[in-house]
Image (cartoon, rainbow, N blue to C red; front, top):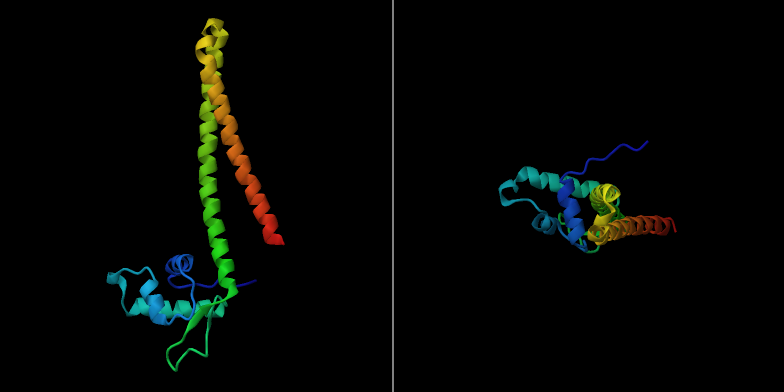
Amino acid sequence: MKRPVHLPLYHEFLELFDNYEIQNWEAKQFWEKLNISQNNRNEKSKRLMYSGLRVLMQLQYLEVNPSISKKNIFSYTETPRMNELRNRTKKQKLEEIFSKKKTEFLDQIKDKENNIEFLQSLLSDDKTLEKYFINHKETMENDIKNIKSNIKLRSEERRVGKECLRL
């Protein structure tokens, strides 16, 4: 079983990879682009950054370009694995967003269904009210159909995305 690896400055590196492509970067470029506030830029942060670069090289997300590197200044370039990492993190973010949105949609459906039940109870008591509420009831039923359609569409997109990843 693989032992989990600790990546120093994990969130800062992920944000950097989301926003930049690493081609022949020296450590100073990482330092400039990492989202570390000026107050926290100290020797400890610098050590963490260099440790993070080592970990990323060990995991084969980055490699040193020997033709451009100098004695003590390495030139880092991302490997194809970096795109896999980017895709995974984007997928995770999308899954979180969709899960949250799906919960909101399901709550909306529940509310609209409750409203429809209320209207139906009113109508069962007095059929003469139907002309006043029929349009409102139909609108809510259409809203429910649209929300369910959105949920179904996203579920199909996820299924197709998974099939594409297997190919």
